[in-house]
Image (cartoon, rainbow, N blue to C red; front, side):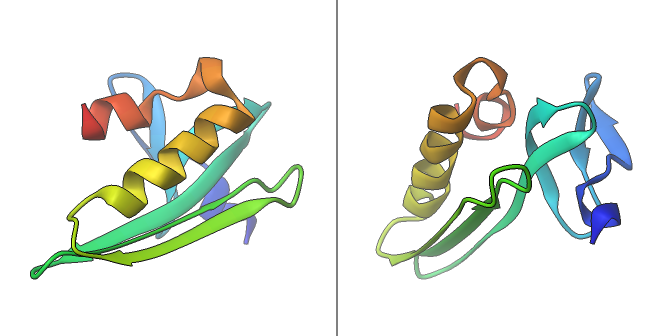
Length: 93
């Protein structure tokens, strides 16, 4: 389980890929809010974020919009650690 949350590849110096998961927010030394998003056409969007330090998480399943679940989950990450939310801006903005 720990390997899912460790950085194995980066973009522009930011660790963002674990083994099968994305590393969204660096919350502590070598700990990240992690998760995965999915979507298809017609618009179905899913997102999960897990904070391994606090044990909190969010799962969003929605239809009708190609990225609403991802935006809601990213906003949840901003609440947890607003100064560290970099992937949201790389992917969604």
